[in-house]
Amino acid sequence: FCFFFMFLHMLKGLWYSSKYLPWSWYSGMTIFVLSMAIAFLGYVLPNGQMSYWGATVITNLFYWIPDFVIVLLGGYSVSVPTLQRFYILHFILPFVLLGVVVVHIYYLHRSSSTNPLSGVDSWYVSRFYPVIIFSDLKMLTMLFAALGIQLTYGIIPLFQGDVDNSIESNPLQTPLHIVPEWYLLTFYATLKLFPSKLAGLIAMAALLESLILIVESRAMSPVISCVHYHRIWTIISIPMIPALYILGCLGRLSLNDGLMFIGISAIFIILVSVTK
Image (cartoon, rainbow, N blue to C red; front, side, top):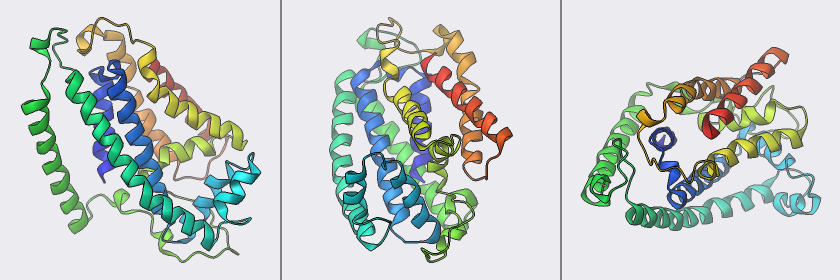
């Protein structure tokens, strides 16, 4: 559920040009990638039918490095040794994530935060304390309140996961399709849009890299923030939201040629939006 707020935080950073603070943005995107990895490992561990085959799909991406795949799988297919390795990684990576969070807070404390007024003078910059601290506490309170409501009433079924993953895995039966958790759908759809595994991996890497390395395109911009000084960004960034939503919807469907064209167009819109 925290991924919903993480995506909102990233969109706010794109909107107010926080990406022009390189090290804060790099560390934040590292947090995002690690969170995705931890979430995927947690998705696989229950050994449900869809998570079992989801692990097969993901590990197939590394088949161009056969020795690495054998070490990762502990054999020639996803099985108990694979899940044991995933469990170890699922236990270790949160500690790595905690260290990156500390680094992210350090750089935010050093550079302060961007602001809607776009002032470059320290007088206009939002200070880490008390502004950022109390803002984060407010959002954290909202997060736990929304999480409690969701867990109690289940008002958004999309956040509850796909029911087919509750079926115990059977290596002799392949599911008709795989539906990961909603926060993985965008990247899973990117993999599905291309017949070649390598092409799908390159497209997914390009999508992630465009977000991580976005600071390079406008690192010398004298304007730190404020969309009023970026009219083009205001116009171009609007289609990025429905494009991400469309990719997420495609991740839950079996694709045909028409849907593949829509998905590739959505990826193109996202790449144009974030690199502007």
